[in-house]
Length: 344
Image (tube, rainbow, N blue to C red; front, side):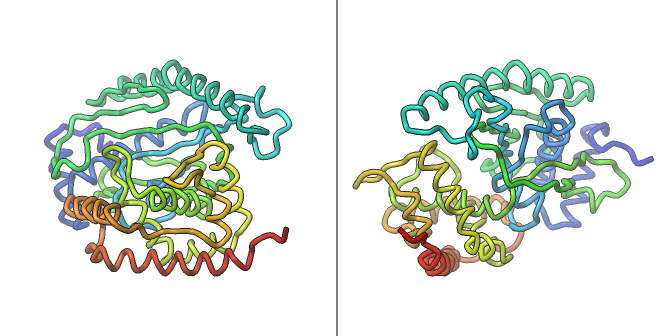
């Protein structure tokens, strides 16, 4: 029976990651973090809460769909709103509040309940799993986020932290989803060892496309980026989804686009200098995926840093080429969405 990779001594794990790095061409510090990402998913989806969780976001596109060619370091998860707040969503087909005033009540209540769940259920569960497996890592909670900070064996440039962020949300159902297997990237190159592995509920890639496309649209309209968020990944992901054909499938599914617009209009309302940003307009032929001005320059620098730390699994395409690809997807989407616009 293969020996557990995580049960090896620190020296042996470091050496093994070096071998996997040589074989794969991947930086060892990213292979190491990937093991912790999969361990976190394996742990959560073995819990009593698994039936309420859906894995989503960029890491799901990488780990579940192999649709993007970059290392995605954090884990986005939806806790089904119908399980967390059944008293609020009773009778709601889309699990959306009926008006903006109710949205404030829902959001406040969901935020409080989710933070309590993370602190008093998810955190103790993960801490117990770390202790029982004798792993050199600690877990801590911050509101609706759970951090797993591990003793790093390898180092990169500092762009990627030796910590896995599990970011939970609970303002949707997580649907549509499918079941997908998840494995460690190093496992292929180290067949003599046993790595974490699991099968999880994953949001359909078409919905993830629209989640990302509408987030990019907001960034472009506002012309700025919040805090120190690493954001270039969204443009890289949209481009790879275009190459894989997933973007075309998503663009053809106008109902998914409109469902995302309805959800974000209620729960994630945003403004630019002219007033509220109209998500419905964005999915009806006015989507913007290419920023301009200072926002473009800031995005270009973040893209450079992402490529420098080895997060892109292939050679990084020039930033201007990336923007050209996003522009092509923007044109394709707006042409198709304009023709799909519901009749008034």
